[in-house]
Length: 233
Image: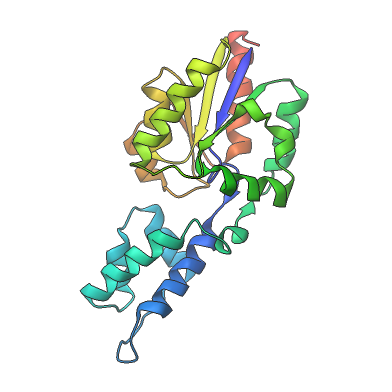
């Protein structure tokens, strides 16, 4: 059996509109009339986010003073995963067709995300994605879970999944962050980094995934070519 584990935000969902809306709202809520604000374009903002520029520095670049920039970062952290901002997320083009192909081939498909249950449910309902992931193939955080670091939480989810899921002949993961890469590599799972999420090529390459491709669809094509070559199915 071939198993494909995928992160949700980045490989499946484009979160750039959500993050930019949060940036704009937090900037407006934090600035004073005396500030000379330099509102970043979405392209520039997303470039900074993907390059892991800290939120406080983004606030400073935008014209906030140091105290305001700290408040800006705190406010952003508090609301970025909340409604109504989650409704700005969009399914990345080509993903649904690829998921349908995965399902048709009978590949064991698992979603592994640091979204909480209700946050995942919102996207599933909005875009009819629940049909691709059986209830026992959904690894996310409980609604009342107090988050640790991304790396710690993703490692815990991966370890839980590998204990609970039945054995598979070949296991791959598709992700867009260092948390995905480390969780997979530390558990002997092959990892494909995708550039459709919140990390740029330099950031992903630093953590040395097995492969780097542009998006989920390309990752799936690579998996199929590799397993066909090795005769795994």
